[in-house]
Amino acid sequence: MRADAIVRQTASAAPLDGLVVLDMAQFLAGPAAALQLGDLGARVIKIERPGAGDLCRHMYLTDTDIDGQSTLFHAINRNKESLALDLKDQRHVAAVRRLIEQADVVIQNFRPGVIERLGLGYDVIKQINPGIVFASISGYGDGGPWAKLPGQDLLAQARSGVMWLTGNDMSGPMPIGLSIADMLAGHVLAKGILALLVRRGRTGLGGRVETSLLEVLVDFQFELLTTYLNDGGRLPQRAAANGANAYLAAPYGVYATQDGHLALAMTPLAKIEPLLDLPGLAASDGFTDRAAVLKRIALRLAERTTDAWLALLESAGIWCAPVLDWPALLEAESFRALDMLQRIGTRSGTLETTASPLRIDGVRPTSPRGAPGIGQHTQALAQEFGLDLG
Image 1 (cartoon, rainbow, N blue to C red):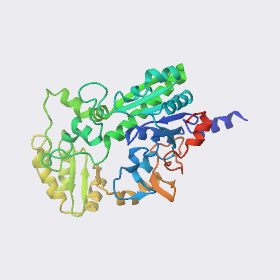
Image 2: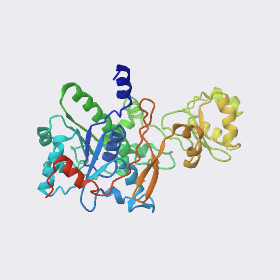
Image 3: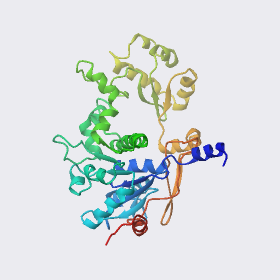
Image 4: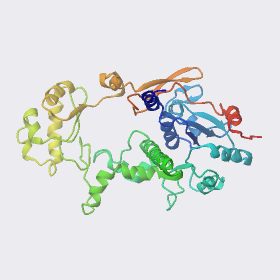
C-alpha cells in the first residue's frame, strides 16, 4: 500500500476505534460520557441489572413510550451493547473483573463507597489492569457532609449557586431548563478520560479521573464567580426585568417585541441610541441606572416585530438574535446546514435524535445503532470475553 493511502486510511478511521469502554453508570451523566466515547469510535458495553436495567429506561420526560423505554434512554444509550449482570452475585462480579482485564475504560457513578464495597474500586482494578482508565461521577465528591446525599441535577443546581444566579430579581431562583449538571459532568468526564488515554499512550499507565455535579457547576460559573471573589464579596444585583446576566450592563438582555423576543448582547449605548431613537440613552453607563435603561429599551422594542428590528440592527452591526423555539431552530437554514440530526434503530422502527457535536476530518460521527434491550448482548459477550455467568 502506498504511504499516502495509509495516511488517508488512518485519518478516516474513528479516533477511538478498538477501545473498549465498560459503562457501569445509570441515569444521565455517566452514560453521557460513554456516549461521547462511542461516537468517537469506542466500543461501549453497558453493564445493567438483569430485569430492571438502567433506571433511566423508565425516566419519562413525557408520556411518549418507544418500545417500552423512555426517549431519554434511547437518546443517551444509542450505539451501546447491553450486558446484564447482578453485582450481588460473586460470579458476575468475577465476570466484570474478567472484562476489566480486556477493557480500556470503566465509567461508574455509584454513590461514594458503593463501588469499593462491590470489590470493584480503583485500587482493586488497577491491580487487574494497570492501563485501565477509571472514571467516576458523584453528586458532591466523596468528602464533606453532602457526599452521601442524592446527586440529582435539580438539587445540584440549587446548592451550586446556579439556580440563585439565573433569572431576574423578581422571579426568584430559577433552574436552567435542562439537566445541565448531568450534561456538563458527562462532557468534563469524557475530557478527563481522553486526557488519561493520551497519557497512557505515552507511558503505558492508566489512571483515575473524578468529577461531580457540584464541581462542574462551580466551573460553569468561573467567569462570574471570579469577579465576585475579587470584588470584596459584593454580590451582583440581578436586573428586575429584561436582564440576562447578573453583572453585565444594559443593554445586555432579552426583550419582548411585537411578535416574539429579541436578545441584545454587548453593545455601546451610544451606538443604539440613534437606531432606537432614544435620546439621552448614551448618557448612562449602563450600570448605575441599569433598570431604567433596560425598561426604556424594552418599551421601544415592543413597538415593532422581531424581523423589523433584526433588519435595522443587524445591518448596523449590532449583536442581536431572535429567540427561537425548537420548530424555528429546526427550520433554520443554518441549522439544517449542520446536518446534526440522525435516525437510530429501535425494535419497532427508527427514532430521530441528535448526533455528535464534533466533526472529525470534516465528518460528523453517526451510527444507525439504537439503544440495546436489557441484556441483549449478554450471551454473545460472555462467549467473546470468556465470561462464566453460571
